[in-house]
Image (cartoon, rainbow over all chains, first blue to last red; front, side, top):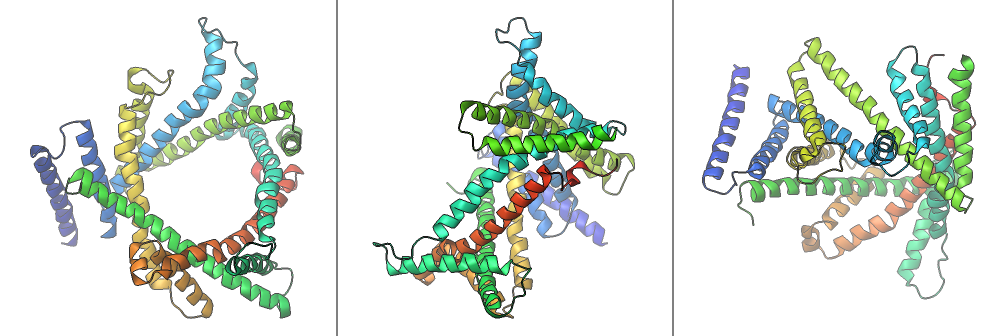
Length: 249
Length: 217
C-alpha cells in the first residue's frame, strides 16, 4: 500500500513536470532548441536531487548515478584535452608519426609515459610491482617539492605576521590589541596541540585559551560553510525561477 | 627481484625528493627548467592515473550489473552518462579528439545542463543537512560549545542583510571573528600541519615511511 502511494507520488510528480514543460514550451517561455531542452533537463535533475529531502527514491538515484557517469566522462575528456594532448600527444606522438610535422619528437617524454603505463600495471598480478616505481617517483617528487615551499609559505610567512610589533607607530589601539590577540591565539593553539606535555599549570591555562580560539574558529568555519551552501541553494532557486519558469528577470 | 621491487622505488623516491628539495635553493635557469620538466612529467602521470580511477568505477558498477546486486539498474545510468559524455567529448564537435577542444559542442551542453545543475544541487542539499545536524547537535551545554554556537550564529548573520537590520555591529563583529580569532586558530593549525607535512616528507625521502609502496613483496 505504502509502496503504491510512493509510486503514485513519483509518477504524479513526473507527470506534473512534463505538463509544466509542455506549457512553458507552448507559451514560448522556453525555446524549442537544445538550450531549451537543456534547461528542462537541468530543472529535472534539480528536482530529482531535491526529492531526496522527502526520502530516498528512484528519481534521486538516477540523477545521482547519471551525475557520477557524466562527471567521470568529463574528467577523462578534460584530462585528455588539458594534460595528455598538449603534454604528450602533440609533442611526442604527432611528430613521430606525422611527416607533415616540422617539430622534432620530444623523446624524453617516453619516460613519463612509461611511468604512466607502469601505473596502469597495478591491475596485473605479475607486474603490479612496477607501479611502485611510478608511485615512488610521484611521492618523492611531491615530498621534495613540498619541503622548501611549505617552510617558506606556511611556516615563515605565517610566523612573520604573528610576531609583528604591537606598537610600531601609526596604528590604532584596536589594531595593536588584535595583533596581540593573534599572537596569543597562535601560541595557545600550538600549545594545545603539544600532547607530549601534561596540560597542567601554565601549560593547562594556555591550552584552555587555545581551545577557546579553536572553538571560535570552528564556529566561524561552520557558519561560513553553511552560508556557502545556502548561496548554492539560492543559485538553484534562481535557476528554477529565472531560467526555467521565467518568473524572475 | 627484491632489489627491483623494493630498493629501486626507495632510490627513486630519495633521488627525486633530494633533487626537488635542492632545486628550490638554486636560482639558475637549469634548475627552473628542471622544475618545469618534472612538473610536466607529473601532469602526464596524473593523466594516466585518471584511467585507474575510471577503471575502478566502471569495474565496480559492472560487477553490480553482472551480479544483479540490488539497485543494479541505477549503475546503468553511470555507464550511460559516461559513454554519452565520452562520445561527445571525443567527437569534439566533428573535429575529433586529435584537434584542440572546440567550444559550444554537445560536450559543453552536457557540462552546462547536467554536470553543473546536478553538482550544484547535490552540494546545496548539504545546507539542509548541515542545518538539521546543527539543530540536533548544537547545544550550549559547556562554555566552549556556547562559544562555538555564538561564533557560528554571528558569522552567519554577518554575511546576510538581516544581520545588518538586527544591528549594524553584527557584520563588523563577523568580520572581526574571521580576521582575528579565526585567523589565529587557523594559523596555529596550519603551522602544526606544515611541520607534520615536512616530517612526513622527510620520512618518505629517507625511506622510513613506505606505505605508498603497498603491501606484498
